[in-house]
Length: 119
Image (cartoon, rainbow, N blue to C red; front, side):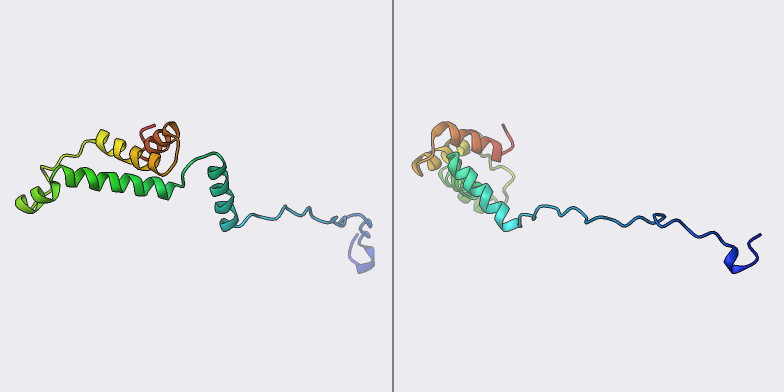
């Protein structure tokens, strides 16, 4: 039946329909733009930057250690095994630092506890 080249059926013209234009996705936001937008949203909401919260927690931790004479004990015992730091004192110290920087107390408590994964 199809022994001769001219014997093959001719495909219909719409056998391979042409594709229309593909939809163009909206432009992607760059990482820098996304971070800039997030920082502005936090600022507009009165929330401190996470780096400021981290610095307040670190400073509060250092203050608690020094007030509790942890450096002297560590040097004397050559170990950190018996050094205890009360979390409440660290949170209160970080709260004091953020409030001094002008953040509202309730917001400061919330962001400190979130940063420490406690709330």
